[in-house]
Image (cartoon, rainbow, N blue to C red):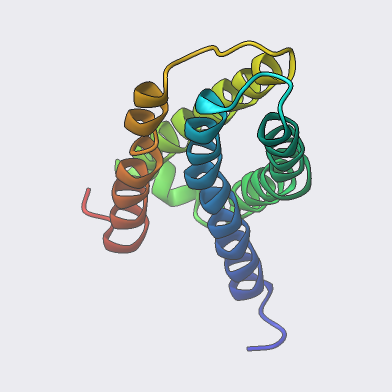
Length: 146
């Protein structure tokens, strides 16, 4: 088992995906608080640092590692691309999360400039997107229903 790289790659891929998902779930929550913070106040300044660090130190590296190792894992399962529908469908959800990640990064830049791009309610609602996507991704990857 120690010499089989597939299981190690899969484990590290899953760890990176968990870290990325944690960030995708937490960042909108920070935006809820940031929407309520007074511009140029203490909370505003603290949230800007937290959001920037979350994206740069945890989310971006975790997404990159999960994505690269996901491509490597696809190399082990090329048959799944052509013979079944679960992997292409899973990739649609994954690319959706990559787009969501990009959207959140763009919102951070707006907060950084002192803007309030969306309402607190908006950020509460979109906070459910990664949870729903994760349910489908995990079922597709583990059960391989199609």
